[in-house]
Image (cartoon, rainbow, N blue to C red):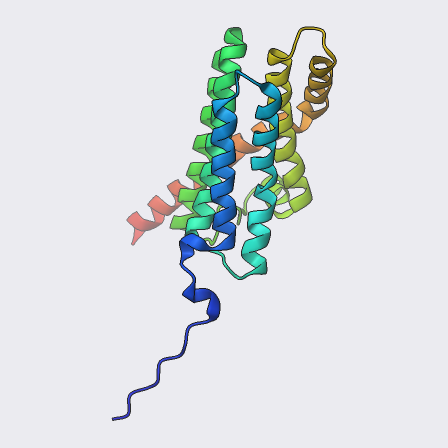
Length: 219
């Protein structure tokens, strides 16, 4: 018998997944985030530069994955985990700057983490390619299928939190504090909508898990 000749893997497959361009961008995001965390209470200006740079790179890792055909499970996990811990740590800083409202920030941080993790778990059980492949409620479909709207909601959440951070760190009655407060107020509506989407996402994920359990028991 003549053995079938093995096909040569495509050029991109020879590159270790760890060294995929979008994953390298992800590592840079993590590094910038930790640099920002380390100087958060020493220089709010440098914190903003590093933190915002880390968040802006989030727009490029997905583009690079599609451009160079380097989508990977590792990259998807790295992207989501970086988003979640970055926001969680920012909430932690706000707990220190505004101790009277620390339980509000704790609850929002938990909601952000739990809703996304539940949605990812549910999407994997249901065989979806991504936790963003959301059906169900029309607001969830709008949120995840309209990229500009999704970007605006996520951006406003970050700008709202950063506005609170700068308002608590900048000199009192300074121009920076005023700009931070105005930025926070402008971004507040979409930030509130984003928290609503987190809650709706958690509810939808729990419904999906219950439905999956019922189908499994019915077999």
